[in-house]
Image (cartoon, rainbow, N blue to C red; front, side, top):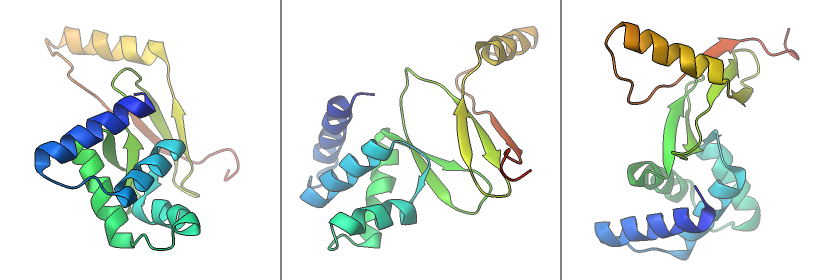
Length: 143
């Protein structure tokens, strides 16, 4: 999803909810979009504090929740006890490899996996609306 389109969607959402589109929320959105994916609240907060020491942790946390509610971000749980947020892009699907040792997250795409999932669904008379594939193990560095 393009940055300008995402920002417009968030502004429209805020207006619809009767919430203010503050400069802090805009700064949080810009930083979130520049990183793109797999950020915990704390990771985003620490990145933001370097340039914007007045932004508080609670503001970052609430704003990430608003991003998810708006549909511009998705909350993910990769088994490390932290909620992470990933920018939503309905046109681009990817799956994840998650290292259980260091927490590294690798995105990947493979059309053969997508085709196999569709085939299995059809065989069972099932229509897939969405899916998430997460593979857990040890990355090359941790092995």
